[in-house]
Length: 346
Image (tube, rainbow, N blue to C red; front, side, top):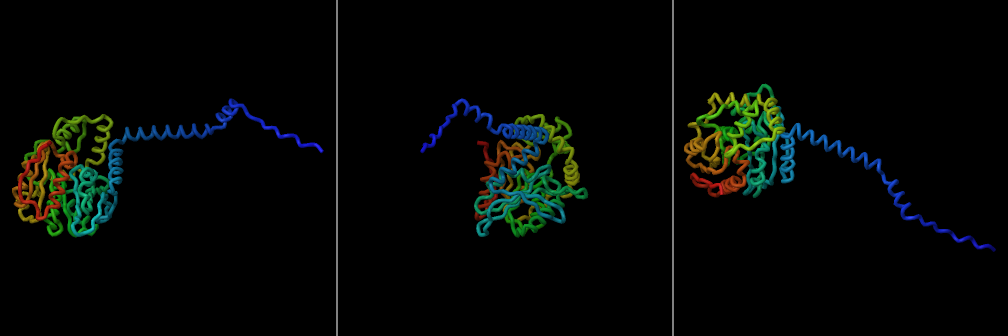
């Protein structure tokens, strides 16, 4: 009986194995993925180049979401209104805070301040005013202070906010004062940041709020910033001017309504009884600190804090100093006594 032949074991040379491994790698798939990645990267760079302002706002929204602040919408008088909200309100020692942005602004302007105000069981809301940010822009609206004040009151109703701490910045301060006069029982405490709404000497052309040229944009930046005017990259400058042409009609309507001066607050603020914080940038070239002093003079129980080294954009650029002082004002029990305080830059 024959034995079966012993099975031969064939060993492939190492060089041959390497050659086969190279040829069997899914290069076609890899090349396709590489092309897709290159195309997507190029498209993203083109988008950033063409729409840098939108990209910056989207990045801000992502940053807010990472901090627990969410983007939402609500229908008010049949119009779609956008807002951000965050924080946990449990009643008791917690409060509800509503933040109102200024002329040409949007809810993202509060991005540096919102996270600080959310602490200690506060829930914060930052709506886009009618015509601004991601809110609807109806063609038949006046965008006046009374109309925007009505929007804030209706927003509070829609969110079932019985009593709030209300803050306004620039034109938003004017709107907040109007709400406080209309619905004083709904406002626990009032905060005004570099607020419009009282008479002051206008040292600039209001048309700068809707810049048409690079020079006008530079002049507007000089009004908004406390020191040397920061340079703006050309592609961002181009996009800002594009947006000014696209949405500037809303700002012009707001300006036209405000410049009539019929809704000014001079002589009306003395009836306010809630605690009031007035915060101002010492180097505000747009609305001078004298306007804050005038508001302080009309409201006996108000606290005036003037921040050195800050301009009209103080709630954003100086949020690290303004935030703690605002929290101190909100938490004070009993409320802070009337005073004027100079806050040094360092």
